[in-house]
Length: 491
Image (cartoon, rainbow, N blue to C red; front, top):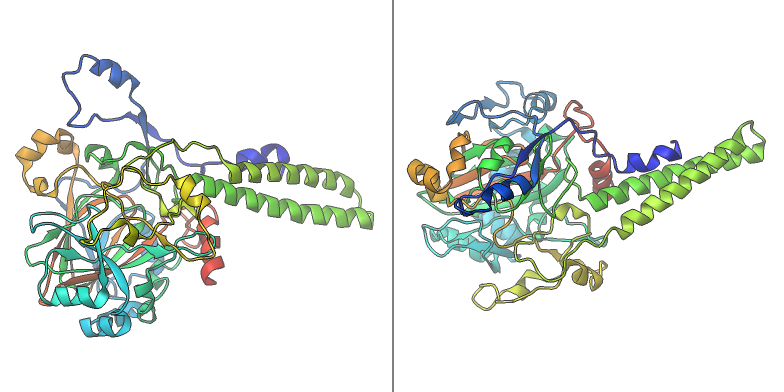
């Protein structure tokens, strides 16, 4: 590689397609009568909206359902028709490699993992929605007993996971590892996507418990094992109408949403970690070229000295880039931000080292703290040789909407309080026991869970969002996630 283009290669932003820029839409609670409103609008930051995937054609659209065997839904066909199009779909029937999930009775779960500690979301009343970050600790068997007793105030959702010695988040929580013999690490249907997390969802509600309106950062394969789930969905191009808590700055072509202070690549890698990986790869390539040139000089090969000079220049540029990536710019503000949400895709750059139990009082409520340690202070004291819980649960996360889910069915109140939603096009689907929903990254959704006699339960896979959408075999524009997965899991 020519040294003169090395640095531009290292910071290349995935060669994304041209994007459109839109002004930030004002929130409903901003002062509409402000004398400086026009000036503020002129100075408002632009949102780079580059989403190019499938969008909802009209309001109240019904997401289609396909039968996995009747439609001969092969991995290639699934990728071409849904993953590459960024299009949700309900899939009837479980593929052969997921059939064993049907053996997950309460007794089986208790036998395999009942003594493991979990964090369970808690709500204060039946009218409350989950997804607000309030959690309590308990054993899995205690939670399952609550489900048996028709407790509707607790919900098993995403869990904190242990970090490895490099600070990278594990693929699943400790209790899930006791169950992993009954499900594949990578489902055959999504075999070329790289998993980010595997999680269990479980609770009990007869009338429908709302998750709150939000979006995830990863592609989701959601498998319903008990009860049913009703989804209300909005495509990423509608995010500007849905009053998310975070300040939007960019929507990548594949839908991956970025908020201020949480910018990533299209495939979801933290920019610092991605730069470090690119620089490391460039250094490895420079070392290879240097060794080859040195061998050529010793052998007296014609032109070897010129190759050696170019290889030395490339090594120097690669080392500079690697140092820049590892040092980074200190852009963390002093003090605390109560809405700060460390992205688990930061590959160890933003790993918390405070156990969740330390943040809870005896009643399971969060302690009243004026300020928590900054990310830099926590990282300085972190010993990566000791597995730590990666803290992912925060209050009022950026990816949640400010809209109370109860308003979503009250059109008059919704438009009065959040008028921009009139421009959004909702879609709906119901996912029943034995069915799956594929949901691409950043599709906003509100989920209502309906329990059977044994409550409701689902397993889901989150995958790093693919951005090379014309390539079934290699659906990522770089080897960042595939290399990471191979290093950790041998695949």
